[in-house]
Length: 114
Image (cartoon, rainbow, N blue to C red; front, side, top):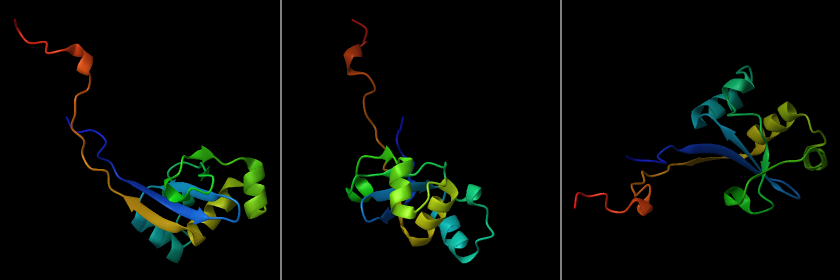
């Protein structure tokens, strides 16, 4: 059975002190939102979490951004305002995960008839 074959779409913003990531539902809806701000943000973002990667770019370990980190970078910790800024100024990144096939539990042994 294939596992892990779903792609991820995120927006990365390199800030002064941290790199910020938000996950979005679809790259096209972000492009549409950038042209037409009347599209509700709830249709664009995939959850309202803002993540930091501790200056490791878009591929670093993701931690939830603290209120003080958001306040220092964006002048506010209001998630809606921060998400809008990241969507407007950030780089859109799409990743495609390839199907993975593999054993799910090698400790089961052969389980063959003897």
